Length: 131
Ligand SMILES: [Zn+2]
Image (tube, rainbow, N blue to C red; front, top):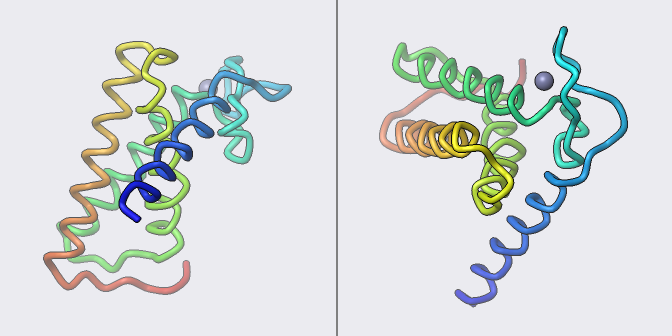
């Protein structure tokens, strides 16, 4: 059981990682950015750098809301802990394809997500179901 779970996580990382080396047609949706969009980020339509940057800003904003005792929106949390975390874990598993700056950002982001998760676990943060 433990092996299956670990293997499953490794496979997920491999899938996300492989889709980081293939690109979809078109460029990043951020104004002025002509970088390619990895297949793993085709739904977000952003390049890797902008994905890391925008996700980090979202995570930081979420952490600030936690610290200020403001309610959190479930869709935003769900996105952070599913799409974002899965993608970043995939990236972290494929360190050979990342620059040192991207690798540092990915690890910093994972730490930030872990801090948010821990903060929510330790305190009673109000989570609203919709926007
Ligand atoms: Zn971009």
